[in-house]
Image 1 (tube, one colour):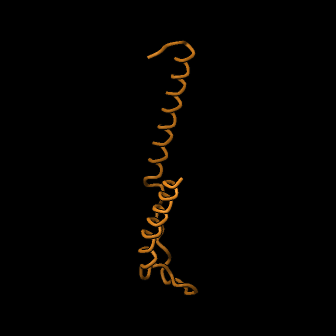
Image 2 (image 1 turned 90 degrees about the horizontal axis):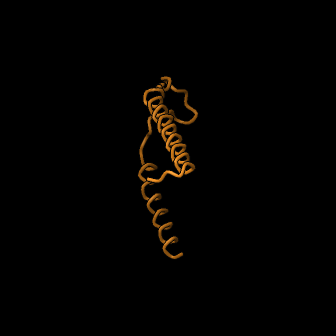
Image 3 (image 1 turned 180 degrees about the vertical axis):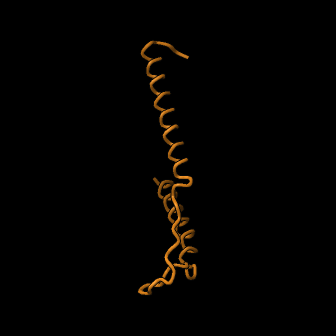
Length: 81
């Protein structure tokens, strides 16, 4: 129990210390509150690597399903490695 509390405390301190520099940044480049933006925000397409990541996730999921079915069939058939 003591080690779990110690680990949780270390994790909390680590997260707090690593997030503080992000709060100390000067102007983030975004519009000021209540001010009309002079330029529209930059539109960034998300599809660049997201579609490749999604396709990889689907392929990995299908591979895992196929491996589980194959393992289940070999166990039912009584085949051992």
